[in-house]
Image (cartoon, rainbow, N blue to C red; front, side):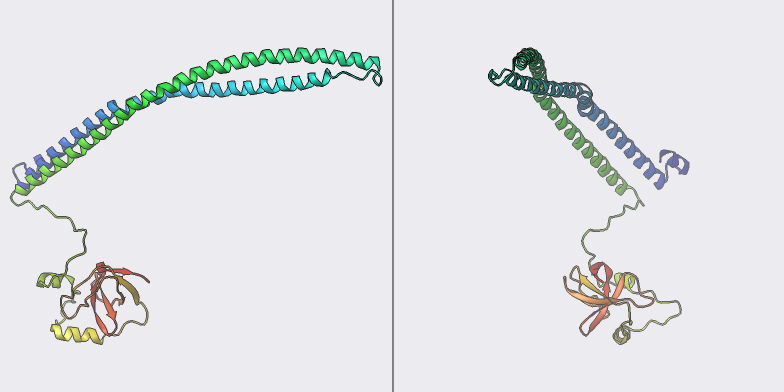
Length: 298
C-alpha cells in the first residue's frame, strides 16, 4: 500500500488514504508479533517442555510400574500353584493299601515340591521389593504434578490475558483508522448491512429500486392501472410455492401485499420480475412481497 501510494501520488486523497491504511496495518503486524512472542514465552514453551520432559519420564515410570505389577502377579500365581502341589504330595498314604514303592515316590515328590515352594517364595519377595520401589518412584513423580498444574494454570491465564490485549489493540488501531479516514475530504466510508430485516420505505428512491425493470421503449402505466393488471394476472400452472413470513411487512403502495410474521402465503414469480420480489397471494388478496421476508417451504 505504501509503494502504491508513492506511485499514485502521496498528496492525492487516495494516496493519503493508502498511507494511513498501510501505517495501521504495520501497527497490527507489530501487535501480532508481540502477541505471538508473549504466548510462546508464557504458555507454549513451558507446556512443550513439560510434555517432552517431565511427562515422558512419568509415562515411562508408569509403564515400568505396570510391568512390575504383572511380574508380582505371576510370582503369586506360581507360589500358589507350588503350595497346592506340595499339599497334595505330602498327603500321608494308607500303608495297608499302598505299596512301599509308591510311598517312596510320594516322599520324593513332596521334597521336590517343598524346594519349589521355597524358590517361589524367594522370587515373590524379590518381585514385591521391586514393585514397592517402583511404586514409590511413581508416587513421588505424580505428587510433583500438582505444583506443575498450578504453574501451567498461571501460564494459561497469562496467555488469555495477552490474547485479550492483542484483540483490544487491534480494535483500537482499526477504530483510529476509521476515524482518520472519516476526516479525509472525499473519502467514502461504507457501512455494513444491518443484521435486522430491511425496513420498508415509501420514498420514491426505494420504490424505484425495488420495482421490476421496465424494458426500453415501454410506456409506464399509472399506479392504478399497474395494480389492476397485477390483480388480473393468473398464477402459473406450475411453479407456485408455499412460504412462511419471517417478519411483519407494511405495504408501500397498492401493488404490494402487507405481511404478518409466521403466516403462510403462496408465492410465484412472473417473467421480467425483479429477482428480489415475488408475487404473494393470501386468500383473495395479491401483491408483490420481498424475498428477504420469506422462508420458502416447498
